[in-house]
Length: 134
Image 1 (tube, rainbow, N blue to C red):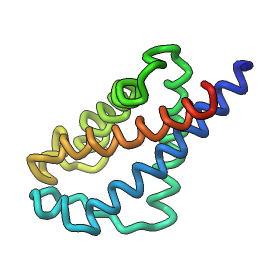
Image 2: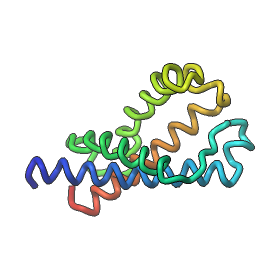
Image 3: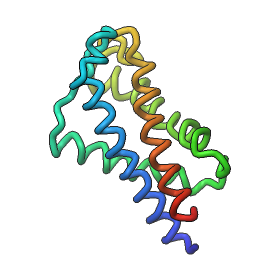
Image 4: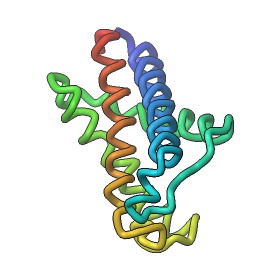
């Protein structure tokens, strides 16, 4: 596959992962899971919320062009999700959203949920790329 084909496929996988992430975050909030565990993350399911996650998911999907861990959807998705996880916990929460380092002002289990939700992104993207032959 050509470079542009790999880039496009990786972006597409990332956008699918972004959709999966948006649905996982919304579902956990709507079901009351995050609240029950003391985490104030429960966004409504809106076009803006979905769009943001799909666009950023596609941008982060470029990391799937790296020829690493191709044999495992689980490990590839988890390892590649560590980039967006670090950005969320170390930059977005403390400096953009003013929710403290690791988002701890949203609850002590916030970092765990961020790891899980971003892993959903990575697993969906890795699965897409596996089925597309990449």
